[in-house]
Image (tube, rainbow, N blue to C red; front, side, top):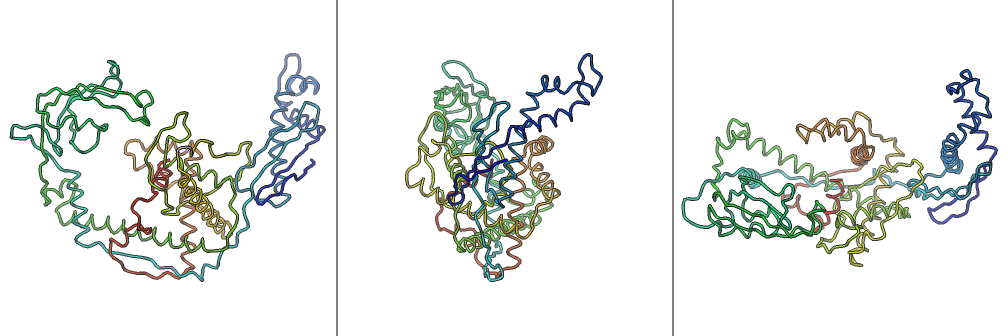
Length: 485
């Protein structure tokens, strides 16, 4: 094998690799010899088929297998011999090969930057904590009551108004043709709740029980069902009853709806849930402070390929329709780097593909947004690489038992579908990686926090739960969409 380095530029390396034809032929012959005892041809005893005939019959099939193995092995050897650590999957391109001739291919790779983790024992961090009071408890139980409110038929002769619950039968059609999923009977719809398409509920305001209303709406351009997206629809709607909300009495009987003996027991459970929520918020704030401290360390170059992938993920999270054949204008919030929660467990296996940001993934974004999202992408990758390096240097690993527990916990969120969810994870390496990555990151964070000096500061619940940036319109859109995936 002959290897020539053709590019050294920052973290980028490119090589031209040539494997002699004699080596390829020898590997084909060796593989055929391995298969010979299992090959049966008429007129020959097992294992007695002449090598020339074997090569004639099966040489081409074996050649493809040998070439793939030769490329992978030589790529791996090229990197290992030079002590190179790829940051992502190398890109391999065959540049020359004919049967009986040398195999030549190019190998392009971006390397992991050299990182020097700081001395974590020198870190001083402040952890914000808060205890739920009567106000938070009352608000939580109030939200619970709002979600379980009932209704009763109106007693006066009037039309429906916002806040009422109308009981309706409806059938939807497009160009006179009914469509699947567009009909229902006895549906309870709260006017003003925005549960249905924009404009649907408004057209029922003022209707009385027994009225037939022709509701005309337009499906959004980005509607989840392509056959309905952007289409004008008509819903023949009959109002069968109008009901008004009935106040919920928060008492022992209300608590029994949730399997509690009395209201005091329900409050104990709710207080425990709030305490858990505050504990999660406290850890998230502490983690953010830690990552901000880590970012203050020595600067290093970020692999461009990883930054491109993260940038594309942010753009798609903010605008899910980005990169489609048709572009639409979408309102979106600015994506601020809210949690810094993305330490990526990168896979260093070699492949023949290299992911690039889609050329149109950001076409609907302003130049200001593009620059901001690029900055966020580089920050996420930088922090992810730093945490990953801490994990590597300190032999921090996620066990299979930990991954299985996370899988069971995720499956339990879907009652009745647990088996299907578990099969989805078991059959999808990317889905399993989505479970492993946050576990890996949390273990690294715990490792660092154990060495750092952490002091606690008691704050109000409002201070704990407030956006650290002081900006309510954060870019959680990007993080939330990433989590959904």
